[in-house]
Image 1 (cartoon, helix red, strand yellow):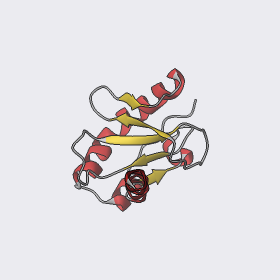
Image 2 (cartoon, rainbow, N blue to C red; image 1 turned 180 degrees about the horizontal axis):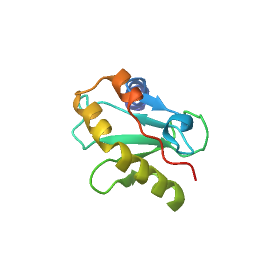
Image 3 (cartoon, rainbow, N blue to C red; image 1 turned 30 degrees about the horizontal axis):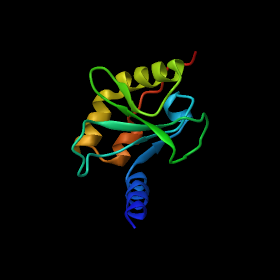
Image 4 (tube, rainbow, N blue to C red; image 1 turned 90 degrees about the horizontal axis):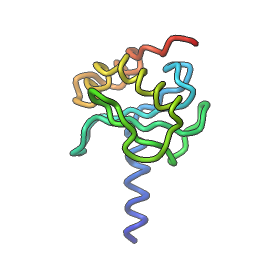
Length: 117
């Protein structure tokens, strides 16, 4: 029964997150951004490991802070660098969303995409 609760909590968490596709972020993969809610950890985003407009619960979590870092899962060094660069470009909006200072509509109007290579 406990594993069902954990799975439901993960699904509920994904429903509370705003998903941003590659065409919006300039990243090769979909990411999820969430408000703090009841979390006791620092600002986080979830990064889909697979490239494209996919939304798969098997993802990687990246912390947002002065030095973004992968805290669970694995990303290639190229993808990790791209995610860190995107976080640096958008840290102010990510923190504001996390803190409830802006809502989802404001968040999705704010992101700066990575420059095209």
